[in-house]
Length: 400
Image 1 (cartoon, rainbow, N blue to C red):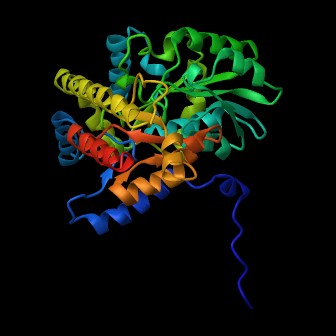
Image 2 (tube, rainbow, N blue to C red):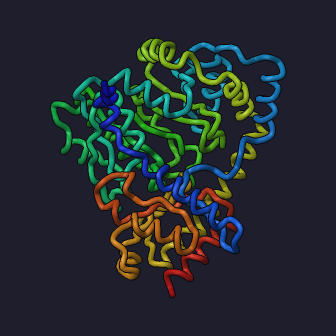
Image 3 (cartoon, rainbow, N blue to C red):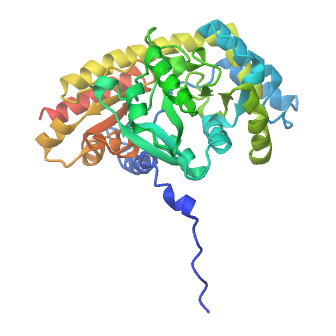
């Protein structure tokens, strides 16, 4: 008797492949082939800082292991870490965010997962901009909701506006999921517009969920403000991965209204028990003056890299229609280059760049459906030397 095929859940089938990682696998395979040539692969496809955790953070992790400080913590996280995060909001943004509203999580992914499970029911719809980070909308799907992609334009900084939220709101809409600064565009929502969006959402009894994992890497005073300044009802997701350079440590946090804390705690207890204890012990050192000075120096380097790459791409005809005000991405229109090279879309362009000049970039397919076939995402998180080398290779190729 032949065994029957394993039945896959509808939930799992709704979640498509993460093309960023599919491209990354192809780039890694090609990188092995060209590793010993004079043009090894340059990876501008993954959004990961080239910096690692500062010395005090690494030392704190080692000390925690040596001293046996590795037992379970409360599901909400170490109280000392929640207080350090609260103090950071006060010193960096002038905000009074009590530690009691802060939930430490196993990365921003766990924070989004918990928030969606706590607030979204089957059939609920969440408005999110197109383009946007694909994994965020999959957390909505995992909670049996539906992420509704709303097309945005360069004039709107590739972000939702209050008018568009109002126009797309239906009886099934539960709220909005935003990111400021955004992946893939590096653009933020102006605080005044974000306030208007929240007012539209609140008037309809909805939720405003804002991904702020790149907020620490803001380069423009006009945009470098937390959504938490607008209302205590806004839910903010943040992370130690980007500004604090702890990607593989898998540590983040969630700021929620007081009444939501016990709900999140109950879910976290059952689903995660607690975030990594070693990562939490290490993260305490992120807020030491020595570590913060390092982070700020590195933020300046990220800005310098942006200021080099954007004009370079524009000169190559890979137009960046909105200068990113944060994060470390460039969302570039490659349609003119595709036409010149006889390529169909950004997917073909990304693979051609990988093949022809050994520069790995991310095609727009992951990030939505509205015009994303014309765009590629460059990560500018690499060293200035690698960025300059990549631009030189692209220039030689595109001007040939």
